[in-house]
Image (tube, rainbow, N blue to C red):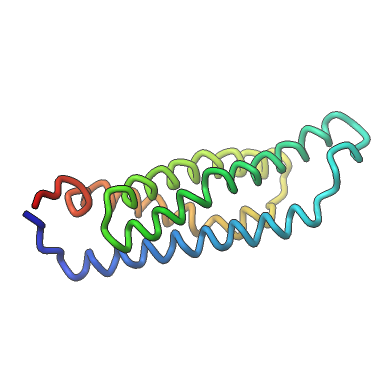
Length: 146
């Protein structure tokens, strides 16, 4: 039997769905601009610069392969209150935490704040609460019977 959904919870789920969709869009725009402006790895003069640039390219490619699809599936799936949306949203959140940990340590160690940090920090902070909410309310998405 389907549970009757509290209207407040339903509103938050839609906010989360829209947030995931916006994050996917921003990832696509951010990395498209970054890839168009980043120099070639082979153009670097030393190994440290090559590794740094290769890491940046690696994050971008990984975002296109994993983060963007999971954010899009999470967005659509949360909106429709589907199990796959719940799972994709939680997986995307875990990727955010992992990536953002690396980014924060890099920025701290280099005493700079990158544009990506500024752009994605609000999402990373919001995702902690989203994950808690989704886990606490998993019965909205899981355990449905007809």
